[in-house]
Length: 135
Image (cartoon, rainbow, N blue to C red; front, side, top):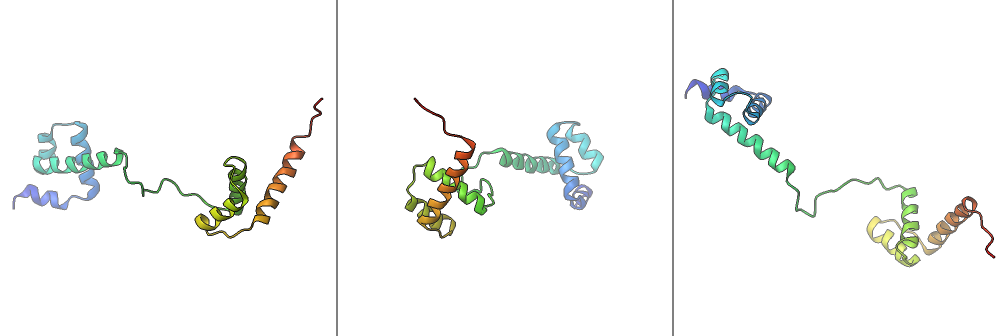
């Protein structure tokens, strides 16, 4: 075993990363880096290849449909907004909303609750948007 492989074996992950970055950014010729850090050029190229592979992976769009896109904290207030959106935007029936909340969110509710939520929202909207006279 030569001395350069011994030095390379003792390098920490952060030191290896720093060397890989120096090779990738071409701040200094690889031969000079190898002499300066007492490692082989082959070792430096291996480290730069690992770093380059990591960069490629980090910036490659995922084709996996099971990747988590985001985490959403579900609160009762959020569920009530969803009820309004399903009925008013999605034109869903009250029973359709009940089914969706039960099946996707494990949140049992009833048609009466959906009606009450819409009535409450309607009353709030009426206060904000007073009726205007139409001839």
